[in-house]
Length: 115
Image 1 (cartoon, rainbow, N blue to C red):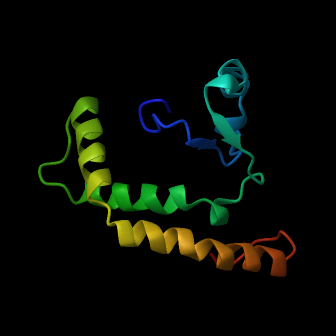
Image 2: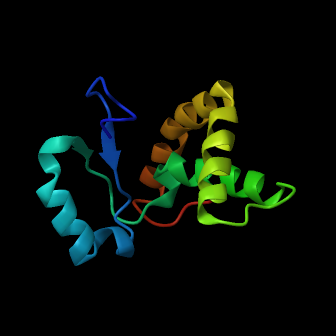
């Protein structure tokens, strides 16, 4: 977090998926809670997590890479390169979509949505 948000304004967001709520992850978050702000999130709501969309875009970019990454370091390099290539407009569209996601979730009273 200190590397990505050296200004101290970054927030850690987890979507409460089962792996993120494990004892190991929970303990680590508790031990490092003073290192960053934590944004509390409704449990298991991928519709409210634009990180899922970004992950899908990166996955698609990696799958279309020729030659494909062969080592973990190659994959890390490709992910960083592709992440830097994401259009600011694309990211802005994701952010602007959030009110629609929230409204959809409210309409179904927390149930599944079409997203």
